[in-house]
Image 1 (cartoon, rainbow, N blue to C red):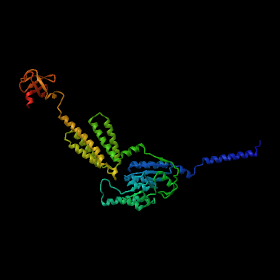
Image 2 (image 1 turned 90 degrees about the horizontal axis):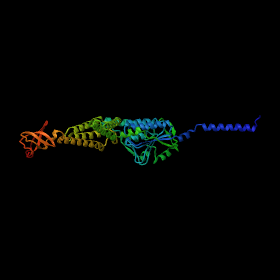
Image 3 (image 1 turned 180 degrees about the vertical axis):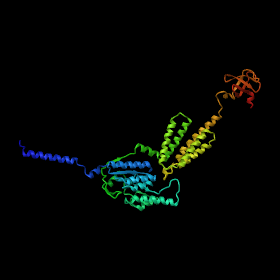
Image 4 (image 1 turned 180 degrees about the horizontal axis):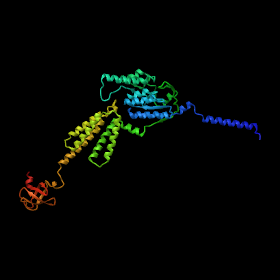
Length: 445
């Protein structure tokens, strides 16, 4: 049967329309739309810069790359930290395919020392009002360098600062002055002198200001940021990183070491208790792990071990507190010198050292007191416990006979004749024979 012309036209038109709809519905989105919908990965670094914070930042950058994120936002507040970890972080930041925004926030926060290096390495350096940065002079741990060594350290740190600050188009000379002269800057000072790019009071305002902004990446390529409406995905630390970051505090590491050693000492004094030994071993291993990542002074560690040896000797021998006091002094000094951090925040504080050493010393002195009292205390069990006790002669003692003492009948020998019924006092015990004397004579002595 012949199909009418109108029906064939309608069929072809409908088929073509369906093909067009299917094509556009399956076609990939435009690049701008994809960028706008890509998330901003955010992390918060509110701690010292150490290997765990470096691992956290590296993990965030890898995650952002895999998620094709539009940017990585690192909200930072740090007093500084280790140079090796700082170099590791900056290496990941400058090589990241995803733009990195370093934001010093909230108000009152700082990016000092190592934090200033990290801030200047970012694609976008931003600060909140009321924050500060700078003071990036290198510090030698545990010693005062001579003029030559100091010059080498300054030149190396300054060259490191120049190596990425110049590529970011920032004020190289002023950034270098923070290294050589320990200069610090408020948010407005840093903005006006081209150390940072933006001052923003909030995260939302920061992303709004950055939307549509063209930046120059570390390799010289240009990229436009599309952050309007982009969801912010916060990436927290893993449980492992949270635990390790907590024990990386030198004060926590020292406390773990002190408590662990005390628990192990308790296990040796009470074999079979098990719990103190297990807890002590875990605490000591955690402390050793943290100290292995921190700039540890191993001479101070030897001093701490010597302090515990003194505590143990004090508890075993009566030295009237001499060894215990020596142990307290050794443990306090060892704690203060244990971690040679480049900043005060990465060293054991005096109050922490005293809070650990004084209780341990007092516990040792208390145990020593118990030992001395036990040695002086009269024996109450067995025949030796009868010395000094009063009994009554049952038979004449001339000089040998029998007496009743504590309800028991004993053979006794007297130093003088004793009549039956006369009280006697025990002077000594010779096997099953008591050496006694009349109670009246003993009373006059």
